[in-house]
Each structure stands twice: as structure tokens, then as C-alpha cells.
Image (cartoon, rainbow, N blue to C red):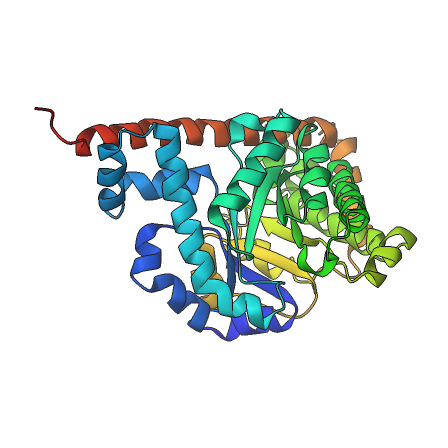
Amino acid sequence: MTDALKRLSDEGVAIWLDDLSRKRITSGNLAELIDQQHVVGVTTNPSIFQKAISQGDGYDVQLTDLAAREVTVEEAIRMITTADVRDAADILRPVFDATQGQDGRVSIEVDPRLAHNTRATVAEAKQLAWLVDRPNTLIKIPATQAGIPAITEVIGLGISVNVTLIFSLERYRAVMDAYLAGLEKAKANGLDLSTIHSVASFFVSRVDTEIDKRLDAQDTDEAKALKGKAALANARLAYQAYEEVFSGERWAALDKAQANKQRPLWASTGVKDPAYKDTMYVDELVAPGTVNTMPEATLEAAADHGSVTGNTIAGKYEQARADLDALEKLGVSYDEVVALLETEGVDKFEDAWNDLLKSTEAELKRLAPSKG
């Protein structure tokens, strides 16, 4: 079962699980995935926590205590989510130690309602890092216009960051630039750069979903021939940009100070179109120094029938560029698509956060001690 995942890991791809729940922690399932399925990290987001808290009774004991204290719903969410992240980080600590901090990490996201507020994002990142209080945490900051300067500020404070919701190559370059600026700030502040880590979460499947929809509307042979190519092309060109930035002069100075490269992380790797192989965004994005964070279904599929044949990114940059150019010629605007996806991405996380507020509030009321 795990041969394909072992091969993936051997190729330099860190396998992270895109899911977390109290049940996964307490049942020993997370420890089992680490032990048997080569999982070396965990990512979370508001949708994942909303699903976890609204299902089952795994949170009832903590919610009962929180209800007795009459905490606000927002404080309850913070206490619940940071407890899960802290416990998961402890389970992953041996991996963190064995990889000198490269892996064994758990990500937790700033409140998505702050996505367009730089100062509040920085304050929230500091608060989350303090609350979780584990060296193997990554604070997730969205790659919005307001998020870019927040990344620099937070990295400059020595807090490790997972930059999320990256869709465009232009924004990805801004993210890498923000990371380097943050490292330069940290260096000037006398911090140990070897302890600061970052990943850049480049979203994959949503690009195909949006572009394929536009190609279907054209209903031509040329359009059909380009279906399912945009997301891989976009990600491969992102990796080319990563290679370029982290071999340049600016990086060389930071490298001497023992800084860590900001690894590209392939996110949204669950295939949305059943016509495509369910491991497409795993098999076709293999390259050293990357992370692939997978929903459990994708992880199981990759373990069962993933096809790992070596590096599937190197040597494909020219074709990737040609595929994106062909889309533009058909009138499918790359800039329009990636801007829409970023807006939708923030909105989806905000909606999930609001759903999380509602479901947690309902649970607090259900478990509140009766008066009198």
C-alpha cells in the first residue's frame, strides 16, 4: 500500500495531510498515518475545523467547560482549534526533530476576515503563535495584497509562515520576495535564520475547475484539447520561478546565514473532475523540495495506485508556457481567472469561518449549564 508514497517521499516530496480533527488525534489515526503512510505534516483551514467541530461529540467535554465559563464563541473557537494544533504538533514533534525543522509541522490560519487588513493579520499571527506555543507550527497568512507586507513582518519576527491562497505566478513572486524581505529583517534583528521556515501554498485543482468551465462553454476541439492542462502548467511554472529565485544573488547572502528556502506546497490537490485520474495532481507534480498536502481520499488513492515515475516537472516549462499561451489565444484570460479565484478563495474561507461561528455557538448553547 505505501510503496507509491515511499517513492514520492524519496523523490523529495513531503507528504502532508490536509485535515485535522480531535478524533483523528485521540484515536491514534494521525500517529498511524505518520508511521505507515509517510505523512510528515498537517494543514488546516476554517472549512476543516468547521467540519470537525460540527460532526460527532469529540469536542463536548471542552465545549461544556467553555460554556460553563460563558466565553465568547470566538474565544471558544480559538481554544478548540489551537488545542488540536498543539496536540497534532506534539504527535509530529519526532518528525520535526528528525528533519531539523523542515517537516513535522502543523498549519493554523489567521481569521480569514482579516485577509485585507495587514496590521490585524500580523497581530493575529503573533497571537496564534503564542497560543499554540510549539516550534513546529506554521501560521497561515493569505497571499492577498494586504497579506504580502504581513508575511514580511511576521517572518521578520521569527515566526514561521505558510502562505496560502496563491493562484497566480505574479503573486507567487511577490510572496517569495516578501519572504526574503522578512528573512533580511530577521537577520538585521539578530535572529537565528535557521529556525525560520516557510511554505508557499500554490492552489492547483481550482485553476482547472474554473478554466475547464470556460473551455466547455466554447465547445470546440481546440478548447477540449486544453482541458485539464492549465493547473499543471501553472504549478510547473511556479516551480521554475522558485528555482530561479532561490538560486539568485539575493538568496545567496541569506543562504550563507543558514536561511531555509521557502518550499512550494501544492494545495487543493483533490481532483474535482471525475474524468481525470484521482492522483493527477500528485503524480504530475513531483519535484525535489516540494510539499503536497492531500485530503485523506487523495492520500489513500496515491497510496493505492499513484504512479511515481521520477521528476514530472523538470523539462516541462516550455510546454507549460505554451499551454497557458494557447488559453489566452482562445480568449481565456489568465489574469481574470486567478483574480477571481483569489476573491472566491477568501470568500469561501470567510463563509466557512461564519459557519464555524454558528455551529460552535449552537454547541455552546446546547451544553450550557441550566440556570437556577
